[in-house]
Amino acid sequence: MSWLWTTADMIAAMGGRPIGSLPAGITGISIDSRTIAPGEAFFAIKGDRVDGHDFATIAVANGAALLVVAEAKLPAMGRITTPLIVVEDVLVALGKLAVAARLRSRAQIVAVTGSVGKTTTKEMLRTVLAPSGKVHAAISSFNNHWGVPLTLARMPEDTDYGVFEIGMNHPNEIRPLVKMVRPHVAVITTIGAAHLGHFNSLEEIAAAKAEIFEGLEPGGVALLNRDNKQFGFLERVAQDLALPHVLTFGQHAKADFRLADFEGTAEGSTIWAVLNGETVEVHIGAPGRHIAENALAALGVVAVFGANLDAAREGLASLRPVKGRGERHRLAIGDGVLTLIDESYNANPASMRAAIALLTASQPEGAGRRVAVLGDMLEMGVFSQRVHEELAGPLLAAGIEHVWLAGQEMAALRDALPESVQVEYRATTAELLDYVLAHVVPGDVLMVKSSLGIGFGKIIAALIDKYPPLADRERQI
Image (cartoon, rainbow, N blue to C red; front, side, top):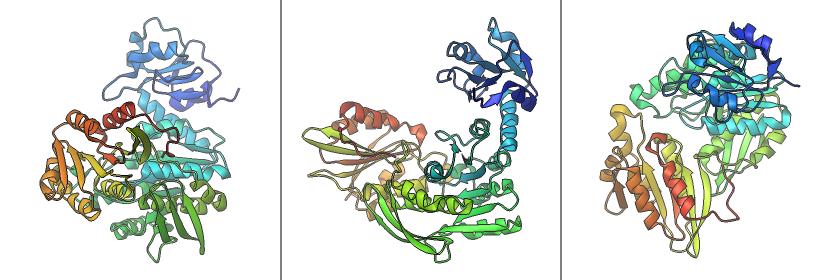
C-alpha cells in the first residue's frame, strides 16, 4: 500500500494524541464529509459557517480511516469508534502537516498570485509540466488560509512539480501562506482592481501581492508581467528584498519571455513567443489574449525549471477553459444554436474587460446577437460606482449593442450607457434569469459574468437545463 502519510508521521508532525487503533497510514486528506473516500483522513475544520466536527459521523459512514479532531470537541464525538488524532486546533494541525509535506519534498515548486488569471495559470502549469514529471496542483481555487495548507498536506512525497495558487482579500494574507509553500518560482499574473474595497489604491494591491516574494527559496525567481502598470513598483520591491532573479513575460520589448504576435479566434489562439532567444509558434486551445499572456508565464516557468519546453508547447493546444472562466457551451434552441460563454465564477474590472473581448471575438449566427449579461462586481468599496460606470467604455468600443444587467451596483452601468445600447436591467438575479430565459433567440452569443456572490451560475444552469447541449458541444475550459 502506498500511503500519502503514515499515521506515525502525521502524529509527529502535528503533535497529536492518538486514540484507538490507528491504521498504518492514510491514502488522502479530506475536509468534506460528503466526498471523502475510504482510507482518507477527515480533518474536522471549524470554518466561518460550519464546523467539521458536526459532520464527523457522515465522514465515518463514507469510509474515513481516521478523524483529526480538536481536544475541546472530543466530548461531542459521542459513540464514534473510528480512530482519532486529537489536536488543540485542527486548522493549525493541518498547517503543521503542510509544513512537514514541504520539508520532505524534493519537488520544484511554483506559486501563482495576481488579480486575474491565477486559476487559469495554475491549470496551465499542471498541463505544461505534466510531460516532464509528476505534478501536484490544487483542485478548484484552493488558494486561501485553509486551501493552501490542505493542498500542501496532500502533496505526495514523490512529486516532481508542485503548483500552488495563493489568493488574498487583505494585506498579510499571502505572507504566511507563501512561507509554508516556499516556492522556487513566484508568478504574479497581473495587478488590477480586485478587492478594491479593502485597499486605497492599485499600489496597495501590488504591495499585498508582492508578499509572495518573501517566501521564495534562496536563489528563487520572481516572474512578473512586464506589461502591467505596476511592474516598476513590483520590481522595486524585489530589489529591496535583494531577490537574485527577476524575470518577466509579456509583449514589452524587454520581456524575457516575449509575446511577439497574437492571432485569436472564438475557440483558441495562436501566438508567436520568444523563448530562450528563439521564436516559436504556440497553439492554445482556449480563447482570449489574456489566456495567451498567462500561457507565456506558464512557459516561462517551464523554462526556469529546465523542463521539456517542446512538450509544454504541445500541451497548450489541449487546454480547455476552467469552469466558470470562459467555459463555452453550444445549446440547441429552436432550429438554431445558442452560444453560452460562462464567466460566472468571479468578476473585477480587468476580468470584465477580458470577458467582453471574448464576446467580441465570438460570431453570432443568423439573426443572433452578442449579449453581455453582467452582474455586480463585489468588494469594490467606495470605488464601486466608478468601476461599474467605466465598463461602458469597453462595451461601446467592442460594439456590444445588447446589455442585460442585474444587481444594485450595475445600476451605475445602466445609467452610464447611451440610448444606442439596448439595456435591460433587473434588481435581482432571479428577475434577470426569468428575462434571459424568455428572450434568448437562435444564433445569440451570451456572455454571462458577475462576482460569484451574485449567483449568476443559476442563469448558466437554467439555460443549460432549458436548452440541451449539442452532441458536438464545443471544447471547454
